[in-house]
Image (cartoon, rainbow, N blue to C red; front, top):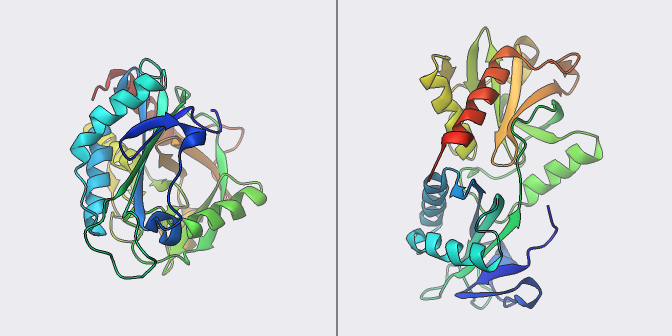
Length: 285
């Protein structure tokens, strides 16, 4: 995937990426006061696009930014055309900040939000069949992880810790319970039952997380939205991560506990990966 897009949409215009400028007084720049969303175009359709835009709208409401996400599909259509990506698989990034105002903590009144969007060529593998390793860390972030905010310093620090130690991800625990990872959700399997942390304020309710839960229910795989305790991760049979670009990634090892040997992915994880692939092939917006 290219490092930078050729074109971006910024506040009503589609312009070359190197010409895109924002004010130094944009609250997204000063405070991280904004919401973002990432979704995929696959086979010329947005993969669960409605669900991604609904989450964007919900998060904007949670931080009192007024913006109608229903205008975005037409904007994205023009952006993809200008980027020569209308017929290609790509990753789409959307960001909406509160806008420009003198620096003050309280929300300013009557300002226009800053709208940014861009797309990059991005082809997902059919199945993410490379088991990964992860490390764990006490969750030091704030208590509104359900908001997909642009101020991601805690997540960035945690992911940097993982990468520097040769892992794919850092998995958080809070009050002794496994919650989520720095940029993905986590599931466990025990005795054929799938477990994941409930969608409360301690996790971001990932779209792929929701898809996996739906797949489980439609295929007679018992799924429980219950947290697994950190001390119990050695007692489960399988573990996997989910995310927009991660898809369903089998976890080979969490800290010192190994789930997969000889790269043989567990049966429930593998079954879910196969169902997810079928859904990608058949899904339309």
